[in-house]
Length: 120
Image (tube, rainbow, N blue to C red; front, top):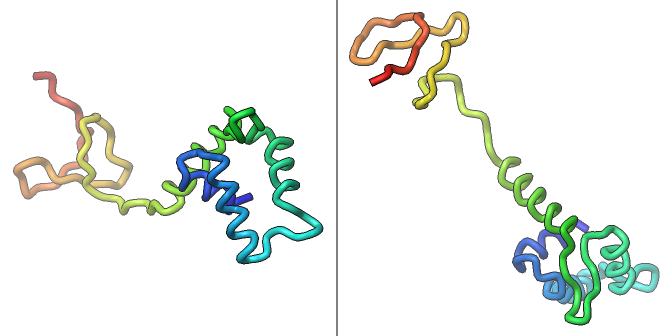
């Protein structure tokens, strides 16, 4: 199913094109056989509610669209790494963590005061 979903992402949600690629890769790498055919896979897609047959071919269902979005977000956020603690510029006022010392703007001295946004 993961290969199909990746193909679906690559084809912009075109289920029929993703299935054509599945058929191609299935022949090349032996995904499908007598025990599990491409037709069985299509039936599984319908039963899972991720795609439906229409007179024009297969289409992604709302459930399938949610799955595409979820997979996309998972792919994006799985590669992100947390940044180190430090001086992150932000327009939002906040408090420094306890024990954290910050350098005042334009000064070489450090301070542990609570930073607030000026109202100008």
